[in-house]
Image (tube, rainbow, N blue to C red):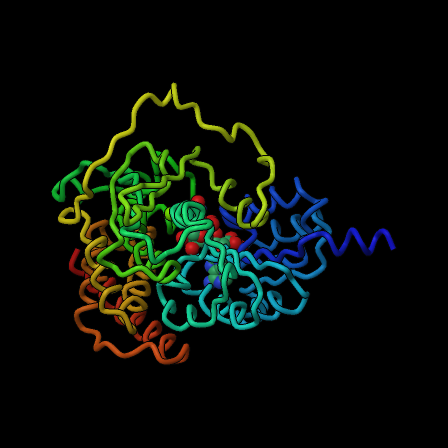
Length: 379
Ligand code: NDP
Ligand code: MG
């Protein structure tokens, strides 16, 4: 009886993408809070060894390896074990369908996979119930916390902070020959390869504008980006009365991951040091972002504003181009060229179904692959 009561009090958690940067940190938090969280499902794509050791460590019986079991296994894993919360820590558009299905079943979704909302925000958001979607992306987790108890109608602007990435303050001519290793070396955050490159091109900030638009239902014209190299303020909300609310903290993703898992409560940090030394920090800097040098930021905003299938095209072209850059097939600035070219040649359609969106995604990947091959041939 006691056992059953304990079981009922624990939150049942599924972690999708448990072998990734976010996933591994989530596993760490769940291991620390085994008295409050029970992991009932784990998924990985290629890293079978780590998946097996995580499952043994947390005593999880249900796992999926998507290279072997296929993408449909994700939806089954996410929904078959009566979870209280599903953490989507997959990378890329591979996370879209499962976000959509989880939301439709009224299950709480802790969302790291920003691509879900970039690609299919127009389809997913109408199904989202109050506090069903808990953002894990640090800026959105910050905005979410600044808005607890507030009325979004009283928001004047959302201010998303950007570190500027490893190439902050560089000009376009300085970016022609940058290497993968330089682009992967983020000054403030340690993250997976794809988001690290997105941070270097500022595409990540562009994706985050679109993500914020969907989560908080704020028009694009009221979503601003401010460069803040210390990454101490994770984002700010400006209200109609002129007040600003900011969220500050150390640059450690375990804070927003844990908050999504503990919500609506706060638990002591499962790690240390979790607190910020303001005196050591001394001062904070802010600048306007340079969207001339970092064209992906502009492209993402434009695609978001146009809506329909365009954000999906933006995302698919970017995923292919980032892969090609990481493989050494194209240069850093080619990422932006490929995304722009795919957006220009695409005829926008309304995002009327997931099938239609996934079709636009597949078509764009073919097109972007061709462009990568041409660029490689051209040298
Ligand atoms: P990683 O690349 O580190 O991890 C990705 C995870 O997804 C791994 O478990 C990987 O499995 C799995 N995966 C990869 N491809 C597929 C696929 N085609 N189908 C199913 N599963 C797949 O990514 P991150 O943890 O860095 O990022 C995850 C998400 O969180 C992204 O959307 C990112 O933008 C967002 N995010 C990440 C932050 C960070 O600090 N890392 C910060 C804010 C947001 P395997 O390793 O087994 O191949
Ligand atoms: Mg972020």
